[in-house]
Length: 498
Figure 1 (cartoon, one colour):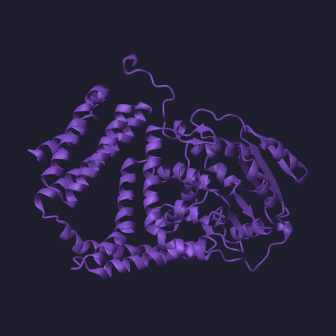
Figure 2 (cartoon, rainbow, N blue to C red):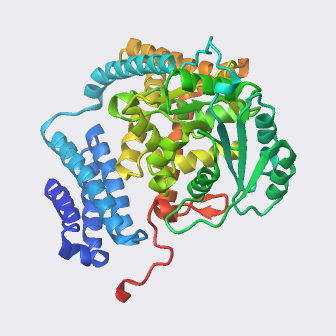
Figure 3 (tube, one colour):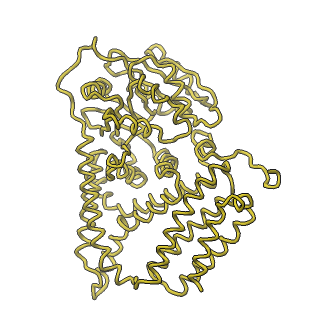
């Protein structure tokens, strides 16, 4: 009976996406909500096992998907597309898990026999991919120079909004560069503080002020600012920087030489993380570097990127549609990187002392950036949030829990060697990433042991980011970016008015 109700809950959920039912979805959605809630609770009470717990977890996010339908804050076609895909994926996984519950003895003891070895394999694979990606992205300074007369012209483009403390340091580091053919553009994106005055105060150093306007409908403010800067630029290459980016005196020349000699049209730079609040940096952003360096992204047509500093051929960028092609995309650099990588014209570099590109963010900026980008990194798909959070728990947190529980248990029910090997591999990988992307101190080395805590924080960030994008608001410089990103209807009409 319980299994039948669980199957009916999936069928009832999928019926919503039939046109006749979709038209009356607000009234119909209550039926699958009740069926999902009742069947999952009954399943747990009848047989508490890893498989039924997984079923309950999937059911929870099926309910979230149904609430998205009831809340109806997105444009109708986009809402249908998003919820239907999530509903079919989660429903299918739920049925598979249900089949396992009914046909296999899936006990905790059984899982304990094979899961630790799977964790060892996963940790070894991650270490391999990290080493591979770190080697691919290493920066090697050019030994051959290019005469100043033959260097391409470069425009440094910076959008700024309410950036008073950081903007001066950023501009000064750019002005101090020794690049001979440099144009510096700074766009004031309707700031409410002294940002315009600061930009104009650098006019005698060659900084050109560009006045921004309020974003148009379906445009993210930053993307519109980038488009305006692109139209105003005159350089052969355009280098986009955030106000948190800091450059050494030779950084632009060194980067351009690498770009020209490699025959690339776009280079994205992962900056050195240079922040006095390094403890906070590790806790909030520890897995941000894992996301770029720990996955075989390029094997699946996805390229690692960084929004802190990237340089691109101006004509190529215009040919790809400029920023109009990504007007409501948060991770806009990923699109251009993916397109140019197809022809071998994209390179991803991690900065070192030779390149001299660093980034300084305070704790609030780190946290806000993580919330703003985490769900878009997962392609704004609820099912991806569930999968990634589950995998992070299983492969980053669970090995530490299993080892601690095994050591405290007198009979040692779980083999201790696999968990120890997994933890060693994870910590080596963790140390490699931070040794090559951040400035290391004794305090930082001690904080490397906080990997499971950092993973737990990242899981929290995933769910917070998912919730805010789907049901609440995310403000970026005082603007609600959910409206263009999630196709949110700013003022929802009543259902009866449709």
